[in-house]
Image (tube, rainbow, N blue to C red; front, side):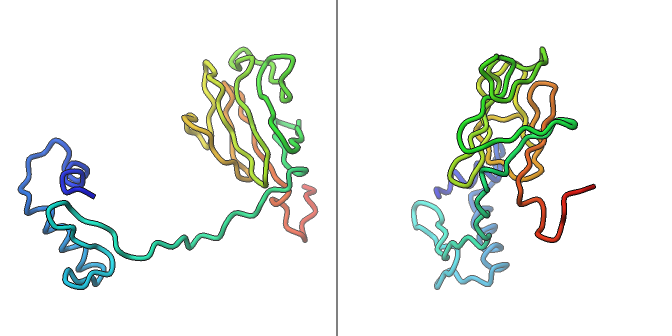
Length: 171
């Protein structure tokens, strides 16, 4: 990463000495138990900047694939099953999840269940689509219990994984 880019990220619109970056990198190396002469994590690229030199590993287990037959949206007491494929959310008669509210666009959002995953995308709706309380800017992967805002309507995404094998699901 170039020194200028690191500098701008750490001290935006602020005039600081170029030696400050060297000090920050030295502190980082110290905290990591790294050595500039034999770097394990942070390598100096002379005349340019710094590079990560460690091994990057993803220690999070991959998410379990969804059972497409067991996905649904919940609104109040209504549960709408979502099978494999695309599901249009909106006011239009062709919407597979029809929502009768003036805050919902005719073709508001889409949920696609495919290859063990479910994703949500906004379709240019006027009042926005929200995922976990934040306005959707790009498609988002759904997890069990996620709240989806479609206009003023809030839906809950559910999967069969929510019930452990010893639970009956009866409340």
